[in-house]
Length: 106
Image (cartoon, rainbow, N blue to C red; front, side, top):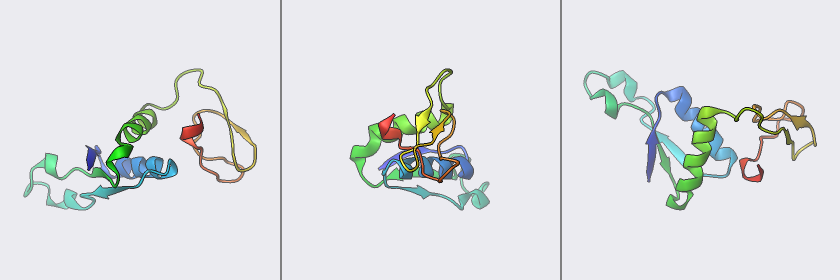
């Protein structure tokens, strides 16, 4: 199922990483169509995120929205599940051990 278009390849890959961290399987299509710009309409060349399982749509959209806007002012710190380090809300990976933040536990 097509979830959405990304504004560019870098952001599309970031969103794929955010979803993968939450255990949501998805694919990034149109990675290389930017080179066809002009031959193909611009809106058809943008990278697209496709979900493997349609049931993940609501959570995927929520996670991408959060990733796009960053943490709210005053968002609480989080504790790494890997080593117990306390990190500020804007960090998504523990600097101490490299464990990714689990967005489902927030």
